Length: 178
Image (cartoon, rainbow, N blue to C red; front, side, top):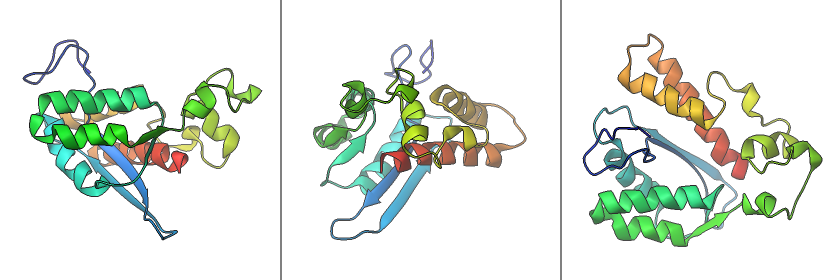
């Protein structure tokens, strides 16, 4: 999100979808399939991400998220910007179930969450072998945004390493929900 929008039709501090990770459990199967995508384009990147995401997420099934308000907001903004995808993006919002609600609404509480329902605090308690601190380079959303900006808009030497860090961070987010 930029103070001065980079792309036509975008708003001040609008979140821009540059990446996704999707863990998909096919109906009738116990096989978990991982899909991921990251844009390295300097142009209007969400336009590039949307068709790929829609192809892989398909039109049926429950979509588990953490922080439904954020995810829905991103989809609504993309629907506003790209009306050709509006119906499909808004349908995703109708299929969402927010796993974060379990912790935000205090249906499950543990003092080790430190009063937070952030997946970064909950995950290491529920699944100690899955921990953002164990990742290389990217450990939270702010670092991910900065890391993507460096990957695309700066001349860092380790672009492939940065890309891999971003992909692994996002993958842990979605695997954690599984």
